[in-house]
Length: 347
Image 1 (spheres, helix red, strand yellow):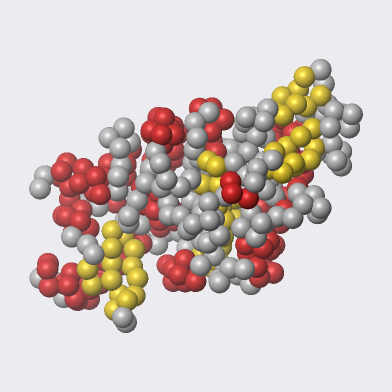
Image 2: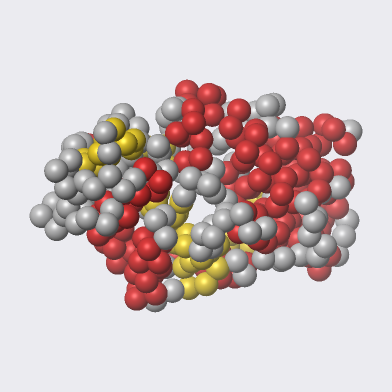
């Protein structure tokens, strides 16, 4: 297998569309062609990998752990034995590779790796928006900020951030992979430690890999408040069974940054929608500045919401200096949220 074939095969396994020009470059930074062939041979246990390549088990384990630290492989324990597998999607690769580089889990970290991922988000991912718009399957879903919803409205337990965290089997926090580069170069002031892992498996993995830390319930709720204070939008994937809460903004988020500019169906809306009460609006325009989806504009010094663009996150409600001038209305039934467990999309 030639060098080009190795990286092309990995891209094929990750469902990377040919338009994504930066992914082969990222793979070249992380893997030699020989390592790429080794990666393609997974899944395997340490002993299986050692036997296949005729190396000592210590060397095999070191290589497999390096794959995991670089974000190209992951591991799980089954029947008392650790087994390594290649990351299963481009999204999984994105998150794990960014975390490995940002947390310097290995040395040397390619100096331009995080920048290459940002170029991918700015160019390739933008160009792929049309393809992603037509793909079936699960999408990230916006859920409203808790304090933006009137206490009179009964929220479902899987759209209520506090209820989601309180019901989670485990809580851990990791750095937002989409924001790592922009924060590190001073282009974003978003707090990084805001992405919550809410299953025992994901919390344990983050802790063991050194990319996150466990939280108490009080610390988890404090993380929700921190994200809320910075106007970050909670997003999840799935219905009743939720494994994480991401906190996103327009500058950093791989999905939100493209929604307003393309209009494509990249994220599911919440069940809510913002409404401005014109008699209370002072025309300050803060809601326009803070709306990640560009759903609000000023008309005759009054804020007006475009319902087609509003995703019902509630950021505008909390940023408005006049209490009650903007409210979140419940506009969609509970059936709007799928009641099945979802997995990450492929693109």
